[in-house]
Image (tube, rainbow, N blue to C red):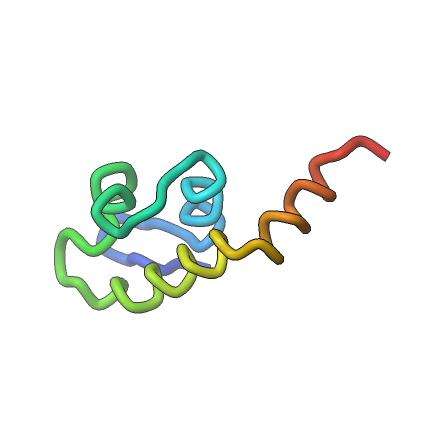
Length: 68
């Protein structure tokens, strides 16, 4: 789903950025442009970033990345 309409950023892109080491909204803004224009996406983007940083999500992502 699109999170930031101003820059066309999706939740998948935010999760991928978190997997690649993005750990703050400031970094997310620099990398993807999220929250840099109108700011309406900031709360949703922050929540997705926190969710992606949680140990449950990281464990599941690592499990799915393993070959069967």
